[in-house]
Amino acid sequence: MVNARRIAVATFVFLASVAWMSLGPAFAGPFEDAITALGGKSFNARMAAVEALGETGDPRAVPVLNALMDGELYTRKDDKSVVLTRPSGKVFILTDAVTGQEIGEAAKKDLTKIKVNNRMRGLIRGVLGSLTLLSPDPEARMEAADSLFKTPSDDSIALLDKALAREADAAVKARMERARAAATVSVPGQDLAARRAALEVLEEYPDPDVQGLLTRLAGKADDELAADAAGALKTIERRQAFWHAAGAVFQGLSLGSVLLLAAIGLAITFGVMGVINMAHGELVMLGAYTTFMVQEGFRAWAPGWFDYSLFVAVPAAFLVAGAFGVAMERGVIRFLYGRPLETLLATWGISLILQQLVRTIFGPTNRDVGTPDWMSGAYETAAGLVLTYNRITIIAFSLMVIAAIAVVLRKTSFGLQMRAVTQNRRMAGSMGIRTGWVDAMTFGLGAGIAGVAGVALSQIDNVSPNLGQAYIIDSFMVVVFGGVGNLWGTLVGAFSLGIVNKFLEPYAGAVLAKILVLVAIILFIQKRPRGLFALKGRAVEA
View 1 (tube, rainbow, N blue to C red):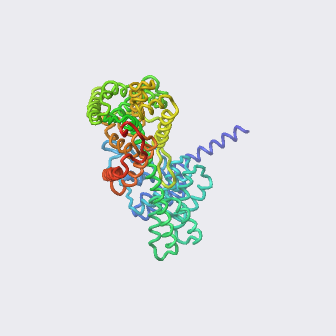
View 2: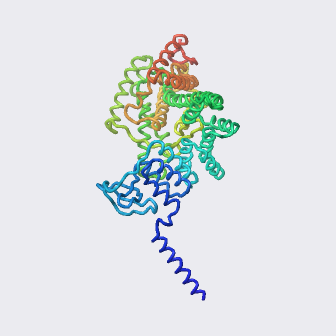
View 3: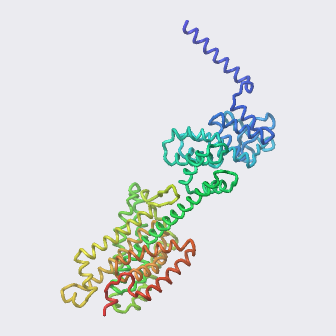
């Protein structure tokens, strides 16, 4: 008996399925009816079909509406069925808009394109937003919220309320709140108190789209919310000015940290030893190329540990550049102490030699230096301020380097000997200090720090034989402005010049801003020849 009932039920289901398939359009549902209506001749009929697709909530409508937006939705001339198309040579591959299955191919002459206008595009964007608002993909939900923001409607408020109740992603939720506020202030008939509350929400999003919305609203003289919209627009502009200033400060600190790293070594070799080292930029370049070589080694032998390559590159660059520095001091510079112009010419010649050496070994083109995952990406605030992780890391790294140098100079015996030789060479020699060794190690220290600067610069600039040339003049300006031989002066000078540059650039341009800074430094040096913080050294001995 039970088996007989099962056979009867199965037979009924089979016959019902066959009947459904044979009757076809006679029992078509709302989705199928709306797809058929898309092939209508008038734009009004098509727009009504788009609205009907949105009301069905059927996810199958998303690819159809996307195809309509992209001009890839057609009707076949023989049976008027709506199809999605994909070009393949001289024909189109056809996909049934209802089932999503491929149904063959056709020539362009056998198809009629379903056209859209700007008004219809706006409607489609809004419908797509409502259909994808509850998608499991966060990016799709965010795009849907942005789409509803651009096409606000009374219906979207209810959809956004439903989506907000179940949204867990903070970033997506913020976009949804923005879209809901836009719909509340834009749709006629909303309560005045609710519209004012929505304006307060929009004030928290100082992006161009919100500003455009508020500008349009403030321009409607017959709207009772126009004055409030104008006030909200001024509030956003004040906040934007603040965040622009904050962004300029961050960019200035970022540039200052680069200048600081490039200038610390020069503050030692030029400020303490009185040597005008025109090859300092090439020592920075050697540090960058050392980073490249270390990363090539990691790529070849330990690719899984690539994210830790910079921890090896920093000491390696210090040793390589420091060794070159010691060789320069022992081979050339020790014979030229007290003759700064001759050291300038000699080190300039060394810089040309190092550039050509690197070109011969590595070639003249830029080299690829990778950024570890932990330095990639950025933190973006709601106000649009972007703080990149590599710049933040370099700022912190530059402060660590100058703190380490301060400890070496103040708390170690080498630092004590270096300061003794700086202040009085003859007295230091009579006390048993090997002044020649101190000279070599001091120059090596300054050169090694330049190499470490090259590691940092490799993460934000092109690694090429000309890398150091872009920073040598700025490094001298930092040292002279901060005070010859004073580390704290170098710190203050680097960050001050970086911030001033970034504040001037929007008004004067990058080149003119640098010229203005240079003129300001020249005028400042006329009043304070020893810079912000003066330090006694060989170059200023009586």
